[in-house]
Image 1: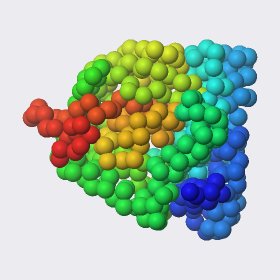
Image 2: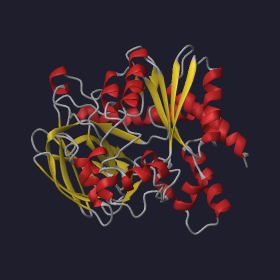
Image 3: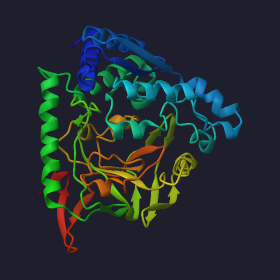
Image 4: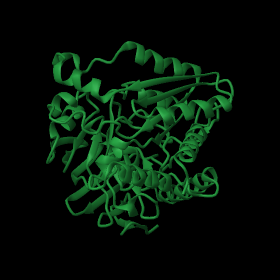
Length: 400
């Protein structure tokens, strides 16, 4: 069994590999209190890779709790300009960015008003989507286990057992158990890109997702293509934004979404847990948002701006990945979104849209929130321009 130090080394190496840190680059790391050990390992590997300077910003959900509980409500949307300026500097300088995910304090926002909590999305910044679309930074997100996170995922185990089990799971889904994890990811992403190429070749007009609690038709732009977690910057630097990744995704037409969806997993929204999400769409807009718990938080996000209630992403996940078969809710969107097909409210990515005129129609928003609607029971059909339905996914297996 690998030691904790070996696992930290492996994750740090994977993070710097995923971001493809270059000699002389600034490297920005977003982390949380409790993730210091991995943060320091990432800094070490980044410097050994030639980083000019590694800048770390730590967030603390317990401090966030005090803001949501006591600050004036009108101030909860405020984002410090120095955080925005930092991101824009990184964009202008073509820096590398690494984020460590996973809740460090899963219960920090318990008992607070979800509507207030939904107004404070930090550390997510409103300019993030635009920076991604500019393709100026090479970036990645990797999970960083903590005992508190482990306790939330495995509440029936004692602290040490839960911590070990989470590390085992993260090591498995990040392919740290492979002989060469970097090569293993390159191979898996090529498989995902091949799935996307087959979908792109069909040039469907729309996708219909239907199963228990869900019947949603998502229109596609004429030049929408299907991509995987393999991005290239304007400088030609290849990087893997999410590790782990198991999705094949596209950017939909934000004005052609109709039907209803039921989430198959809880959503962790920057500290707020939202369970049992149900959303109805008409003419592209989410017109009704309900949930068993925390609906007000998602409603607050969807009201952020004009594009926040429309779709910016549709992602399909097959049954061949390592996350879904674990049948575990990790309470971390990075991982959970790669266990099941999902949609995202808010900002859309331009890279999957090939035509410049179509890119102008991509949804714009200050937010991007993924939530999971997939399961083995969810059927996915491609709808041709003649209105025919072509099976795309059945029981988690590709049909095309």
